[in-house]
Image (cartoon, one colour):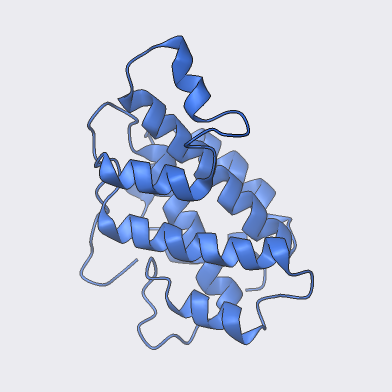
Length: 181
């Protein structure tokens, strides 16, 4: 199972069928087809970009509908211009829970390594260590290769962010399945 979609389909077949009719599923499917064709670096960058966009939408949905709200996200000095700022804002607003926040922080660290080091890949010890901290999959003994751990975690994160409603005060809570995906 080298292709991300094959791995993801095998893991998600039963567990996320509950999301099939939710808003955002079509967008998630488009993302997944793009993600499937990417290199390691491309997959990391696309996943982080998608998470950034989804967090932005969740935050905007929680704000008063004023024209100036876009200034929080756009421009050189935009206070919510970075993924880090969006994650923190979404967490403090209760739009994501602590587990999601920690997963996003780890993915962000992986993204930063890939963005700033042209020689890094999933075989790098620091990336393996970071991927070992990802929790959105059932791999307690950490037997999955780093790329597979990243794929499963990032796809789970994006699926949850894209299928949960972006309603004011909705608060994204991660469904638990007693340690399973």
